[in-house]
Length: 74
Image (spheres, rainbow, N blue to C red):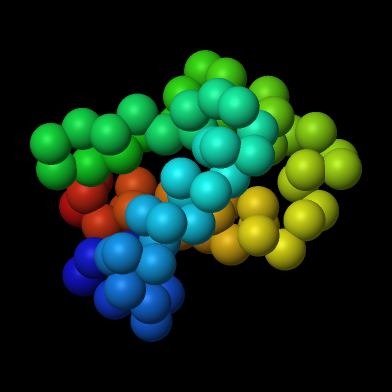
């Protein structure tokens, strides 16, 4: 099952959300691979920052990354 299906949203919605956060933070959060994604070195420490970590949009992104990791590794 894809992460989008697991979360009940479209792939396009996830993609737009990720790009919006990348634009806001001024750095890539994900490395896009042919059939999966990985967190970037820059995105990990940013996600651990309390002010960022507790934002609802960042929490949704973290959930999506976890779902995507499960979907592409299994």
